[in-house]
Image (tube, rainbow, N blue to C red; front, side):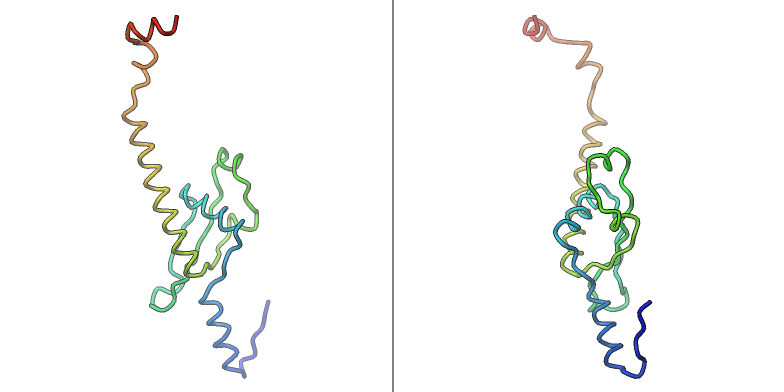
Length: 132
């Protein structure tokens, strides 16, 4: 564990400032987290809700479902852990999360309205001639 000298108050303030600023994920990490955010596997909350100047986010990256995990290559250091992400990347992740919710909701709505039975068992005479 890292120790901070309590006699140097400026050092404590600088550490706190760096902590509140969060860190930037590299491009590969950000893309992985954004994919999981699109899937709804990221939980975000403000790092310091009472401080209006602190715009960093505390995020938890959950494990993807087995099917998604088969297709996505995720670092084990990212998933199942909490991270402090800076303001700029936090805002981008919020947009990706919202986009994912909208697109998945549209997919489910389309699935709800889709009629599989008639597509497979009732064909118009024109489509029967086309298939022969």
